[in-house]
Amino acid sequence: MGKLGRSSCETEPVTDILACPHPKAAGRNVVFLLPGGMHAAAEPCQVVTILGSCVSVCLWETKEKLGGMNHYLLPRCGADISSSMRFADVAIPELLRRMLEMGAKRERITAKVFGGAALHRGESEYASSLGAGNVEAARRILASELITVVAQDTGGQRGRKVIFHTDEGIVWAKPV
Image (spheres, rainbow, N blue to C red):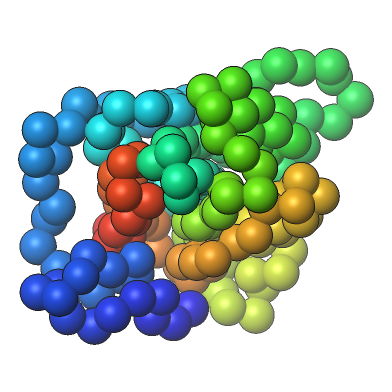
């Protein structure tokens, strides 16, 4: 993990876990994502979630200012044919599909990835944790969809509160 943005909250919002004041919704609708949830918006929106080993992928389209976020629990749905958003291999493609339906162009979409903690494991055990599997699934699926990951705050042993402004593509992540 490292800093993903600027170190001063006065100059520009940051995309990391710096000690910034809680961002205000500033006229945006506020949506709280539960596990297995997803929200994509063409209007200004503040999407909030709390992550442990789960992962959230935030997609943002730079020209149309469209954004969306998911919150999935498991890397893959396995043998079951499932449309549940609890799985990365369903949640990420579905979020991308909804963004494209709203008018986003694939070549202008970027991703930011958050979460994937190993809450009850030491650092040496991280690679075999559920959180690591969730992060790897995000990287693999986004690469296969030709979506560039421009920032991430993943791993560790603590959860995160994530706040995404869909109209600006700005994400704040705070350890919990």
